[in-house]
Amino acid sequence: MSTIAWIAVAVFVGAYVLIATEKINRVAVALGGASIMLALGATDAEHAFFSPDAGVDWNVIFLLLGMMLIVGVLRRTGLFEFVAIWSAKKARARPFPIMVILVVVTGVVSAALDNVTTVLLVAPVTLLVCDRLGVPPIPFLIAEVFASNIGGAATLVGDPPNIIIASRSGLTFNDFLSVLAPFVLIVLVVLLVLCRIMFRKAFRYDAERAAKVMALRERDAIRDPRLAVLSLSVLGAVLVAFTLHTVLGLEPSVVALLGGLLLLALSRVDANEVAGEVEWPTLIFFAGLFVMVGALVTTGVIDELAHAATGAVEGKLWPATLLLLGASAGLSAIVDNIPYVATMSPIVSELVDASGGYDHAQVLWWALAIGADLGGNATAVGASANVVVLGLAERAGHKITFWGFTKYGLIVTVITVALAVPYLWLRFF
Image (tube, rainbow, N blue to C red):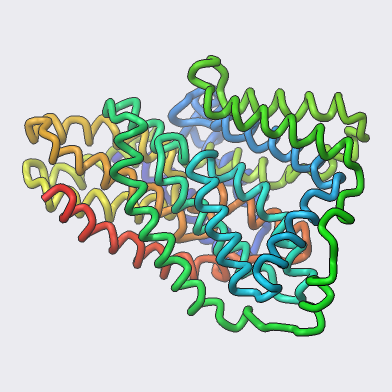
């Protein structure tokens, strides 16, 4: 590697340590790291702001912004309170059954939508339920993040890396559904067992609070029926447009932004108030992180790592599968999985071709997808949904520290990725 590549690695590692230790605000660290990368020439404005592979992913930024605007209006309707009371009553106001409902809903919805959109919708409900029952919301939010990243792996549209893999490999929506959906169902069940063990202290039952919740009427929570109908109509149209974005020729980011702006215009709520509720620090943190990771792509660091890993096992399909699965999970825990998958895809394509392109060689694509999707659960910055939920929790007064998340994330990632080993062996070998 070149000198500038080593410098880029040093800057990234230094920034990552500061984010992990939380000695300095993570937004300041991300922006500082991005500025240093630009100043040193590890990347430039052209790459940082306009490159689809090595710059700020504006699709992610504007998707988040659009959905945050929609959620900001939805919050004024009372719909979140309605869903919170409904789910609590369905679970008889017992904390663990409530977590089961929220985790399953998050996992299933994440398979149809992107995982960031899902957590933006589920997190406010979770905060309200936990407040009503007097239980700590942090374990519930962390469990939902895990479920969103796991559920997103089930389909072609559930996680951006899957879209990249599909375009490069020629795999179809049905291919993803038939291979990954059964595995994801198994992993979600295992996740619920892990949550029961890891967060057992959070499931305290308060009979008095439970009785009060059971006495509530969901319909009384709706403060503005007209706005609720309007908001749900716009949200429904946005979700339909997400699934039809290839037919419509509109990126999900454009759909979300149009939906958010349309809802603001039709609802006549105070736009300044809604804009003030947008998680601007989260969006800025993402931008800085994208620039830093992009510098590693631009200087060839990620490419060097990928070539070194795959070169060692070329022609050995099962060792290559295991190495690809483990490396993808490990690297996706510390860098965004979108540029990683974009870099690895042509290399995996070469390996599949070198193996004769037979059906069983497709296992390499599935190893890449599972590793990249599930590896995002390992750390607080491993996936977009993680960062978004940390921001939402902090705004609500429940700070989730880097290690507070990561100590559970590492356990979940190691166990779920390990489950992929026998699954891939039985399915393809």
